[in-house]
Image 1 (cartoon, rainbow, N blue to C red):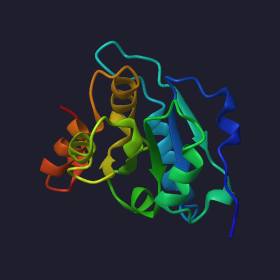
Image 2: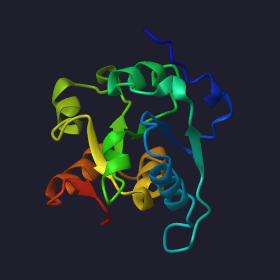
Image 3: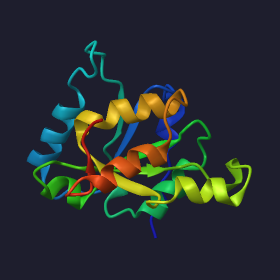
Image 4: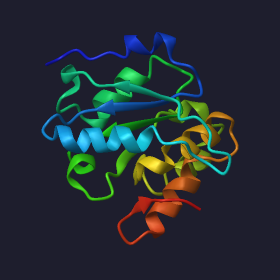
Length: 160
């Protein structure tokens, strides 16, 4: 069993989206994903702020591995995983995973609401910044994005 940590996130600014690469089998796809993530975004062409974990120690890591490591950083509300589906799909859909534990909610019903569509959904790289920024300032919640992804034929959040 490998020990994975997010110690390199000590300098992670709250407004940087965290992207963890867990699939290392397709370097050209990874280059495409990172290029898409580094494009200006939003109606004002905001600067993309991304913290990449591109370390082969994360090869094959599960969502549970990512969540366990992310639990050390209480500022994170969502993490984006570049897994085998990301690398093999035409849309390069990253896995958006909520890091907010049940204890953060006042009651079980509220927690169940955020998990109505599960703890994860896919999103195109171009939407990572919008999701991360809006969740960071509590403008929108995870379940709103998950619901929109659920409505997409491919179950991928693209935009509102």
